[in-house]
Length: 72
Image (tube, rainbow, N blue to C red; front, side):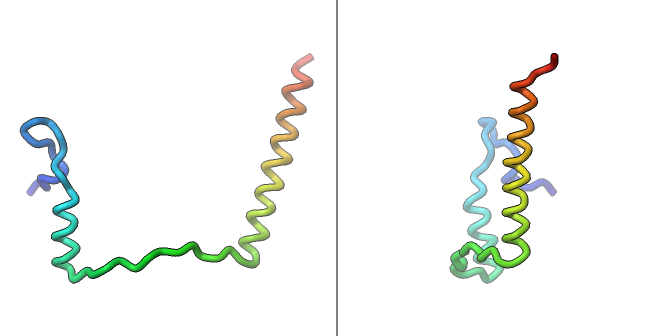
């Protein structure tokens, strides 16, 4: 069986999927969605991110040196 939400209508546009999702969400017992918050970055992950930033800066410096000197 084909899902009508993902197939073009007679005029060639896709059907409105928001009504279908709303009915599915209510049928599955969904209520209000919980608000999302950003997880704090801590410990080794924070160190890894700073290491990546330093690596990117070092690579940018090396690429800049390479372009300024050119091929002689």
